[in-house]
Image 1 (cartoon, rainbow, N blue to C red):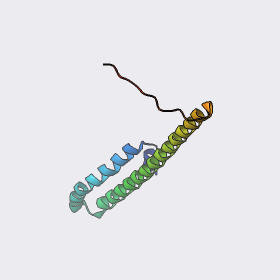
Image 2: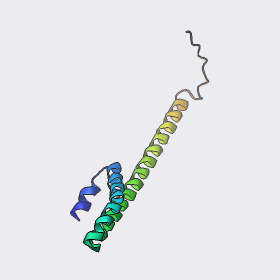
Image 3: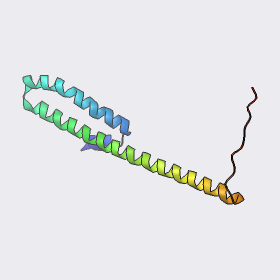
Image 4: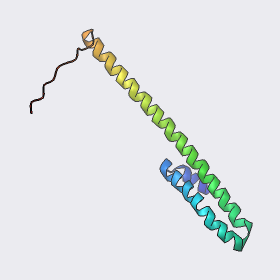
Length: 101
């Protein structure tokens, strides 16, 4: 439980890295398993599974945060457009720009 509490405070990318690292270590632990018995592979499997759960949760939280940020940005754009229209009563006409170079 202490490890879980420690990792839940990490950034999503860090949690994902730990989960992937646990998956990559599983074959090496499997080789050690032949010499030591099932206890090592079972605990490694549980650690890898826990790492994946944290990675999925971090991914979901990141997606949710990005969606909220996008929604806030779209709201800001809509407010700016509405303010521009209300300031002079009509949308501003496009302007011609000449670039001298």
